[in-house]
Image (tube, rainbow, N blue to C red; front, top):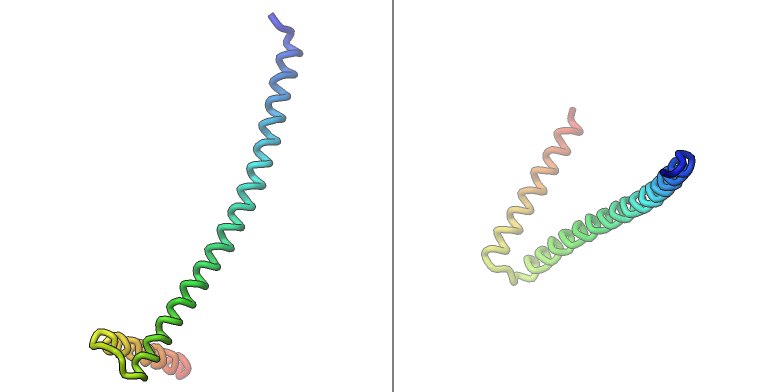
Length: 95
């Protein structure tokens, strides 16, 4: 049977290695979370930009008169949405 001091020494070394590995993994986890946050923000900005460009394309098509009936309905829906948002803003200003 091994002396208790040797067993404690090995257990202590293993615990120290586990603590070190935990710290390393925690740092990597933090780094990956930050990267995920950056990529999520970039994706959100890209999606907003895409939606904006799609609206602009629709407006250009509407002004050129090349829209089909679905496109005209979509433009009408967007205009109605903008008018509602403007009305809400005016109502808030009046409060």
